[in-house]
Image (cartoon, rainbow, N blue to C red; front, side):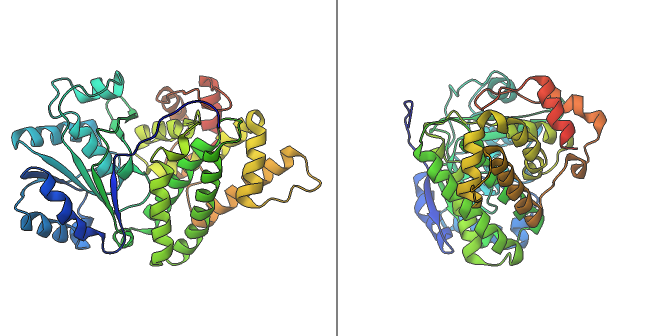
Length: 388
């Protein structure tokens, strides 16, 4: 491995079908007033809400309800959450839901005691928190984002047509997260599949960078193979606990910064997908899927050795008698076949994007420089058009 890095993960995880009981061990560490954050009400239908509220009450907590967190949390919702926390002198933020709830909770945590507008401070100027941070805990109900064990927080501003992520430091990461694979089983299949592709793409964004012999790449390949294997089982039988548990655990390790060590990383698929989401509000994992293949086919010539390795090590492509280009293309063909099998969006048109939206999406795309090819705006437009 080349380069220098540090690694620490501050989040404690409780994993398994009996993991919710450990909420009792964590709650006494924090203050009396808890802001309970959740989404559209599915946690009430499946019984998770009642179970969590029961534990909060047993521990003598005052509950401040913060419902209605949307799949792509907005800056307006963030400001509402900040107001709630301030008015009620909240001591602790407990997110019950998927990555959007976790992201939102982290954004609230760094904003409550700060006088600046959170959007301007964190998502435009990308400043670090310089005020007291309210601690966050997560009870995960959807596997995908990895937000349960990282400092990332993505917020959407519909007025400005921007969807931007800020990766905060270890002091903003959840103090603990509870991962019960059974909590993910009531999700509609489309949401499950979108989460699966989000997991896979997180791994790819770190894998497709660098040229050295890097331990992180070996870890990434193992995670990719696990996701592929378990996804095919879960799509056929969404109630398969082993498959769902493996997907959930892979999701966490895909984006808790471990496999990014020693890597420059390439997050352009996420930049493209988030720009699509800013304009259309489409499901995050599906936006990534729709732009991935055109993007990877564009950068493949610039990082050919890694794409060859991807084909051989992840997809089992036999290299005998083939050129490197042929091997790499077979790997991407195998990726495409798997994507179609699990049922992700294969084009932006499926997500409601039309050609007259391309320029606005390009305007909303942040260009990064960690990958094998640094994009121009023209490159962005070409990939978006190829994704239609």
